[in-house]
Amino acid sequence: MTKKFTHALTTAALLLASPAVFAQKTYLHCGKLLDVRSGKLLAQQTIVVEKDRITAIQTGYTAASGPQDKVINLENRTVLPGLIDCHVHLESESSRNQFREQFTLNPADIAYRAQGYALTTLRAGFTTVRDCGGSGVNTSLRNAVAQGLVPGPRIYSAGMPISATGGHMDETDGLSLEQMAHAGNPINLANGPDQCRQAVREQFKRGADLIKIASTGGVLDLSKDGTGAQYTEEEIRAVVETARDLGLRVACHAHGAEGIKRAVRAGVTSIDHGSLMDDEAIKLMAKTRTWYVPTLIAGKSVADTTRTHPGYFPPVIAEKALNVGTKMQGTFARAYKAGVRVAFGTDAGVYRHGQNAKEFGYMTEAGMPPLEAIRTATLNAAELLGETADLGALEAGKLADIVAVDGDPLQDISALMRPRFVMKAGVAYRNE
Image 1 (tube, rainbow, N blue to C red):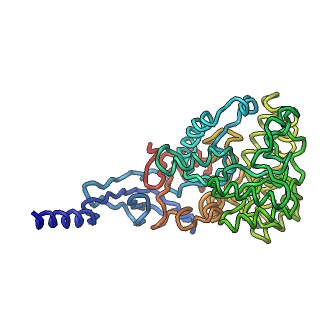
Image 2: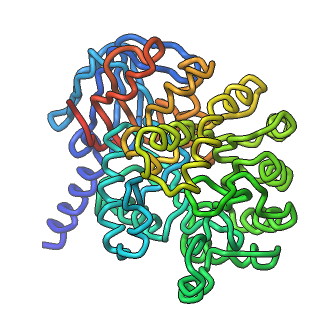
Image 3: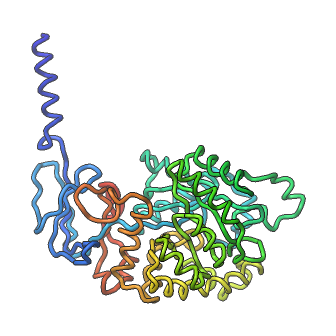
């Protein structure tokens, strides 16, 4: 009996080790495959996927090699890497009720909504996102997606964004004195280098993948000015140095030129929005190779909504929306031409989730070629995240994040608005 048992175990081990018996492969037959590095569209290619990885890319249409293998026909599609949005807010979506809901929604309400927004984002072709600030539900959502409990894009969470008192992410802005007193001192508020260091460590303790700060005011808050600097260079440097010690990168919300320059000199990883960059700021960003995440769709959205839906925003926000939102695309054009490095980001949540790919159109309108725009959401975004080994291109060894569209996005960038197939880590979440 011992010999038989040993033989059975040995046989089972050999079978488990044999890919011919147990390993299921997926073969994606791609009519055209976009090599984002070379910029070439390669005809009739096969992507071979095992588990969550691309194991090979072969010329021609390779037949399945085993009875459990699967073939997906994308022969009439253009196939490209899963897209990456480096600035989203999965916890919320713009509505007339958004400010009231701060007082009526519970964390569980936010979580249920966020799950829906996450799935919408994934099905829109965005397989990875950088969530640039929420209540902490964003970090829990990241965990739930990673554990396979809910479907969604791969999430890099900033947790709660760090703000100066009275700054863009101070949620007590605009409240009565009584309400301010009742709210106390939110944990994301930090003033002075020591508090800034503590705030970074707090977000690290809560599981953040990156740190998000605001060095200027914003548009969608109740403060009267969205352009002025709100942190000193010394304070920002304290954030950056502490984050670096903990292995974290720093995303910086900034609209006004002075706040941008302070943040760049202090060493932040990215400037997000960058709406009112002056020539000095652009030159500084190009020299330091600081990433620029432009979020043009957010500026367009708030400005258009202000014009077409009077009363949608409180007057103080409406005024800022028209002042800042209308200038973002022009700033982007100047920065791109000056050689500033661009990574794709949209501020999803300021507009409806799932419309992220509209950003590509606004970028190309401003003078960026379609291939370069696609690279901002693939190669560049992967580099910003520090994930070039796994993300950003269709190559053997990388995660099987794959999108297919009708038509040729190099000729018609709007094709990216109509994904027909979306795979994340080897699992298809859309297959039309």
